[in-house]
Each structure stands twice: as C-alpha cells, then as structure tokens.
Image 1 (spheres, rainbow, N blue to C red):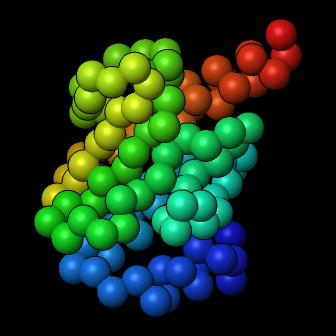
Image 2: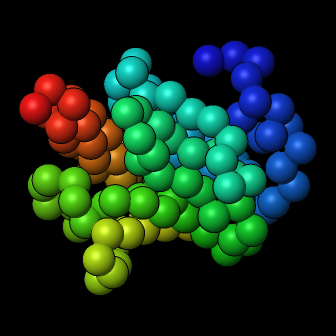
Length: 122
C-alpha cells in the first residue's frame, strides 16, 4: 500500500519508536496480502473482517500493539500478553526484537484471518 492514510499519519508521527512501529507495520502487512490498515482511534489499525490490532502511538519506550480480541485468536503466542477477557498486547523495544518475533506475528495474522473467514462462512 502506498500513499494511504497510514503513510500520511506515519509521515507526521514524531516519536523515538517510529522506526520500530514502521518495522512491525511492515511485518504485519506482509504476513498476508489480505491484511489491511487504516487510521482508527487516532492510530494505525490492522484490519481484516474486523479490527486485529492497533498501535499505542504515545508510547516512547516501546512499540506496542493492542490486539483487540487477542484472547480469542486460536494458537499459542508467547509474546501476546494480558489477562483481560479479550484484549492482549505485544511490545517491541527495538527493530531487532520485531524481527525476532516476525514468525509469531505472521502466525497471529494467519490465525486471525482463518478465524474471521470461518466466522463469516458459518
């Protein structure tokens, strides 16, 4: 995706974690061509048949994704943390850490898409 609202948002994003946010963004978007993004809640949000995750844009010590229904995503994801009814989060302190978690992020995207497709087919 080029020249979209998230690109514009990112061009104005003044935060020490901007490069980490951008790397995580690219990993999620490249995990599956069906994954989309938009600005929702004043933050980049990943979407596919519903909201997968949004960044916490004001965090300055880490890049954090809030997975709105993370507890419902089937699978075991060791870096998806939280004990609420639905929400889970994953934080990244560096580009290297984002790369270390690339496979896990891609598995989360795949599980989310499969879950959403099954819900819409049934």
